[in-house]
Image (tube, rainbow over all chains, first blue to last red; front, side):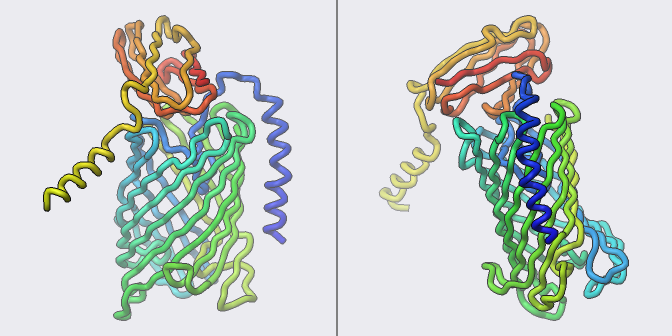
Length: 297
Length: 111
């Protein structure tokens, strides 16, 4: 029901924004926009400009777990991003992991901040926005973690996030629609510290997002994510799903500084082991958020 | 490594590092900036060939040639000249500007 309401809101909002955008699309020098960060957690197809370098802290946080009085977990990328040519972009940097957990079933209580690991990312533009308003980029992101994202426990974890980022310019320089296709396999060595081997899991998902340029420097929008979680690296055994909906914001603060933020609320979830649950708070959190401030140089 | 394998490896390396188009296929363009205005403000180029754009900054202050749709940015010192190499482009209009002087705008029309 909530999903249907969310989808209806996005679908009904689109013609309204298109009409508004067409009415306002009078500025011939409205700057083109790099679409990568205008959709919140959903990433656009942008790969930056050749010669551009950027530093940014990017925090991804999760709030709320089943039955707990307090759950907060975050991973912050201290990200160095550069674009060596007009086709490919690279990112790399360390991760800072933070957890504040109290009385959550299956998790130890903790209040920790620690070096969480290292990540790298490569983005390659598969389809250029040219005569067609559609652009598509493939991104691959290997990650090594020493702190578990969810529990904050010391682990050895490897993840290989693969995404297709697509966006479509509905109204030039005004209104964009974006979508991601996600495949995220990961392996963790003996996650429960019981002398077991490597545990494999995978997450798959799809998102849809709208972003509207409400001011020359400000984009507002909304996004919807549908995620599935599996045991096994190749979607082997389904364990549950979650649907998130929430608003997004992008602000170009100066020509060289921008910020982006998104807040997602789980509006529907399922657990394979307990079909009576309305939300999945085992593999997913009740809320999640992204916040990033970037400085280009 | 046998001689044959060395030849194959050499050929593969040569293919990997050979630009997709040779210099003979490039289209050269030139534009100036004076009093923080592009001169001319509109330039044109053929579609689907690499473009070499020479930007002459005739002002005493530095400028940054930038374009999101062309996916390039380059700082050019006051009185200096910069060369910007562009990938083969589809037909269309591509805006560019000086990121240090936001009122300085131009457009490349690809036909």
